[in-house]
Structures are given as C-alpha cells and as structure tokens.
Image (cartoon, rainbow, N blue to C red):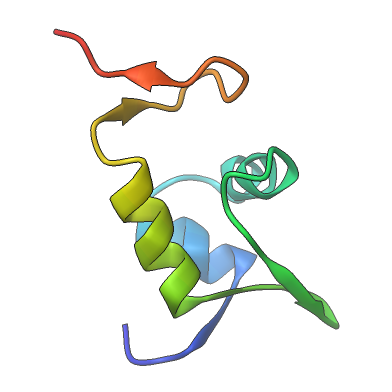
Length: 69
C-alpha cells in the first residue's frame, strides 16, 4: 500500500470483499471516506479500520460482535 487515497474498487481489492461491502461499511460509519469526485478512503483510515475491527464478525453491520468459534 504505497498510495494515500484509494477508490472503492481498490479498497474492495485490499479487503478482499466486493465493492458493495465497502459501500455498506461506509454507509454504516464503520469505514470513513471522503468525496473527491468519487468516494475515496485514505490509507490511515483503512489501517484504523483493520485495527479497530480485528477479531470482529462484520457479517451484520448493525450487530457487530466478537468472533466465536
């Protein structure tokens, strides 16, 4: 990750999810974006998201809980 700003498609690729999942994360407020023409996400926000939600089950964004096995 050398760039500073990432498009929704690039974030989806980094997180290995589809672009709709990225839009859902942004809409729910779990991933902070900015709009410069199109939505962009900064590198620090991606890293913060990964740190904050490590070990969490994000399959239901209205009910985020710890992973259980």
